[in-house]
Length: 158
Image (cartoon, rainbow, N blue to C red; front, top):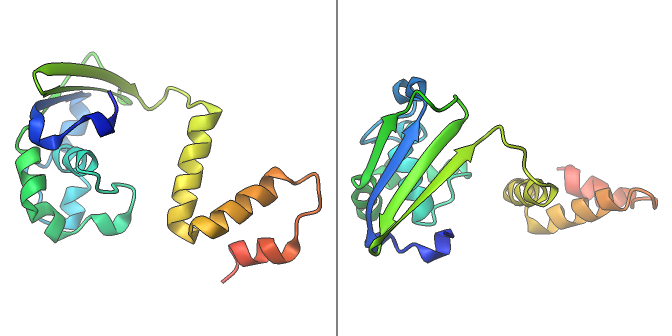
């Protein structure tokens, strides 16, 4: 199911299974600082489902840890260890609106070229802005023709 299909108010429970070794690292139940939030499955999942950009460093603040909608959703999340999973795998099950969806994830599973491109462009846009990202992407994709040095300098300079 896509994130757009999920209304956080309709979520009953979220169960996350991960390799037990990560429970000592990323399982802070009720983080209170931005740094703690980065090490909390519950916090990061709640933020993502509420549309908060978990890829942006400035999303991790003490204030976000206290937001009522984040705290409410975070309390619906249970994290447990599963020795059958590798270090790079996880299972998430979301129960909402009377139905349940279970999804398996593996960070070692290769991304398609389209998925890699989407992630690179999204991250670049956060770092250098949408306009510069598009200019740089166009220049890279047209390396057979002589790239405009001024355009490249504008993208990577300053």
